[in-house]
Image (cartoon, rainbow, N blue to C red; front, side, top):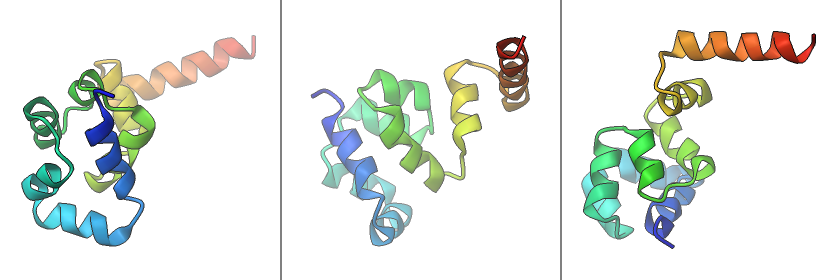
Length: 100
């Protein structure tokens, strides 16, 4: 239940009008969904790890990340505390060892 507000907000981004409303005034949109201070700070800082720690579900957070111009590899890099290039390299290495 801890991440309910954050996840509900992210789910709302299925509607283009909600994405536009968020982009127009992020703080008001976050308050509309009842994000707590920790969640709102994580959103403001674009800190996916902090959003997860605040109860965010990565599947819902991916919708928010798209608004920020981030893709799944960007999220993976943040989660593994690496650069996007390092994360891509890890994926390639994992793929190679899986086929051995």
